[in-house]
Image 1 (spheres, rainbow, N blue to C red):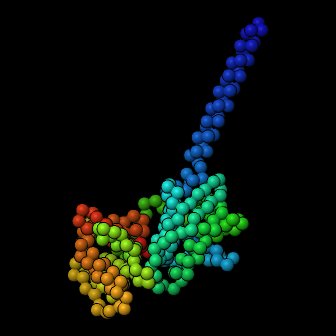
Image 2: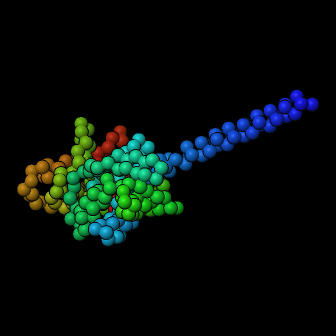
Image 3: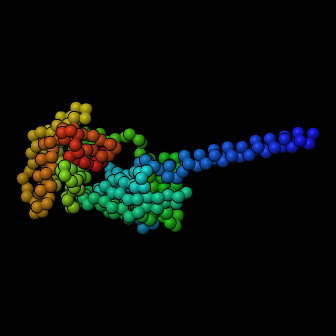
Length: 273
């Protein structure tokens, strides 16, 4: 009788132990799939407001600032004029962002450069973060909210036509170079098969034909001004020459890549609606 009772209790203990072990593994699995880094990896966000001198500032209308968390410990996005990149680490609700590097373009629209400077200065001040539905709030080390974003809808890309495209980089085949500091190269495609913009010094115009991902640009003309900076004139010449070699394009979110033969990258732009 005693042996039977002892065996029964042993079975109960074994079952209880297995139950505890199962619960442990389920909790561990849940924690892994819902880890802080896992919630942010691969997500893209658009800035809606930021704090400057203790004042909440709304993001400029028509000037999108974005933030994408990579799963390799790097983040990137558009700061409104330039593309930027930095490192990021999270632990629990704590967040650390390294000093950002960026391209060196200048944008003349009122407030754009001031907003960009303020945004890039705030990133390394991050101390914690909070996710609330489709909203991301980054706070400083004192717990004060400094950056507020809304989640970007996956797969939502800007259209080729009607978007204001600003050149980010030029691929010469041997090297990729960013736009000369202090210059801005743009492109706008209209619905009538015409495109126009600034090539850095002069304004240019052309015709285009798009079919699927194929794109051909022809009849390129421009004004005839001379700018004192030779590097800007060289950039302009290289840009207009590259347009003649365009054979296709691709858009991923707010990034436009014009490609040549063999789908090789020629020109990369960031876009604003």
